[in-house]
Length: 264
Image 1 (cartoon, one colour):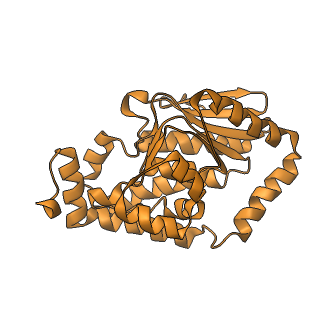
Image 2: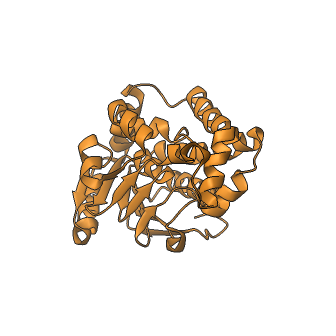
């Protein structure tokens, strides 16, 4: 465990299973710089913990993750491009820590998933969702793009589906998320923990070295490696769009609860 106690997360270990829980239900588990740092640290520590064989990413309350926290967005609205680069770089590092964790990871999705929250689900090796969950990649409605999460989301749901849902910002169901491959199982709420337990049981009963090697094998073989160049490209992409006139207008109109200029 970390030297500092997380304030945005609840972390428990039962047997060989570490559960990292987003614990900000009052803001629909939206993340800010503090949450991002705590998630990165939590997954880094889980990766190094000899007694941990798999990691479950869970959340409290009606939503799994609503994306960016409003107060964080208000701060970002006036960021310079360099400040946006640094900020997006932290998000990218957190997602990479989840994706590259040598222990298998499972997203336990108990509620709605929006924007950056979809990146959290996609960065995990497996995802189990309740059938009532709604998903949305809403960035273009704010004049932004899902750049930093895109390497993981496109891998999970495919380029063809990403063309549609990145561009339209439509909401889609858990059943559609399953059809695309973003989630592996869709279950009723009362069956969520049973299904997650089935997966964790399978993971901890297998050879730890083989599981670790298999995870690396998939990442090595599948499409383009998420390397420093790709991460830098996505970080620059979100920094550029946040710093643009339309990006600033989109975020400000959202925060001010008014229509953006392109709808007037």
